[in-house]
Image (cartoon, rainbow, N blue to C red; front, side, top):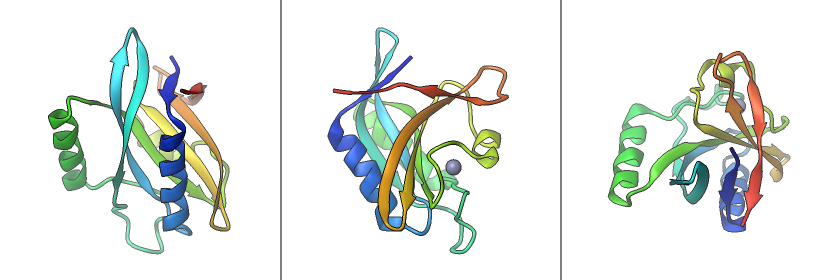
Length: 141
Ligand SMILES: [Zn+2]
């Protein structure tokens, strides 16, 4: 399965990552599944629950923010397709922490941010046996 999105979505994720640098940003990917394809409609920025100083390499969306996001998605008749977050001064691939906190089905989009500048953006999907992530193709519409 690929995730289809528009350039404006990539821009939003990159800008969020640059704005929170040197801390991680995180948010939700809202959209629709049509004929087995994930179509991104909106990125939803969430606050990072971790206190300053512990945000590097860790992101966690607070339950309250998660509920707000899910309510928002329902109102707009969108599904939660996955999550995005940034890796300050690190590559756009999942860490062990990411693997430990992931679920199957969801897309995990990671943007690498180096010295305030967003670099690569990759999407990942955890395998069914939860042992690792596979790359998921990003198709720009
Ligand atoms: Zn991560």
